Length: 246
Ligand code: IPE
Ligand code: IPE
Ligand code: MG
Image (cartoon, rainbow, N blue to C red; front, side, top):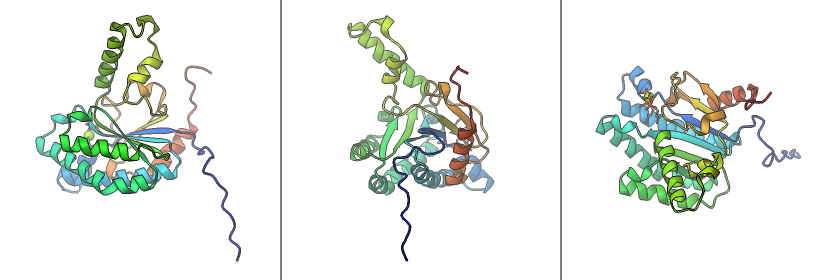
């Protein structure tokens, strides 16, 4: 029996129209608490959700998925929890890098990741370098990321260029600021999702979210999956983005 050829959709824009989705992955601790488990079990289940959602993002045709994994404020947590999170990150890179690479994913890291343990910094740099020539979607992990730190760093870089006469202060505009942020080579942010019912940005992508659509869901991060991402993209498709116009 002849099989019908599938249409080639690889070059078609996905129907939801979003290029870049970012997620504040929140609720691991509450997920564990509901099950009378230690918080670390919630973080482990959160890593499973990262795997599911990274695959779904690729299937849904996203160009970039940015995941908020550790904020510049999360150092305030007990040292044991910080160590659990760093251990999970290490194991995630070890276990999943080959699959990401095989799928053509380009891994990126945003945030001041140099403050992490030197061996972890080396693993991150190796993962980013190994996948940098890929042509598939980007997965950007925000590590020791804080939007205010990012902006301070951008202002310092621009001020240094101005001080040595490379640019004139009155020629500094949004494009110069965009270029000095961690996200300089990421597509513009379309949709920002936060799980777990909290409705705040917690110092995430404050500049980039200027015209992003915001989507809040009560789903706790370890329960989030491809269907939940597709539902968020359906909601995004129904939004009327006016960017200040009519
Ligand atoms: C998100 O889950 C993961 C990180 C912030 C690293 P939380 O650990 O914040 O979970 P809740 O908010 O306590 O439920
Ligand atoms: C934001 O979640 C940071 C990440 C998801 C990595 P938090 O749980 O740290 O945020 P707050 O403390 O509730 O604002
Ligand atoms: Mg939280």
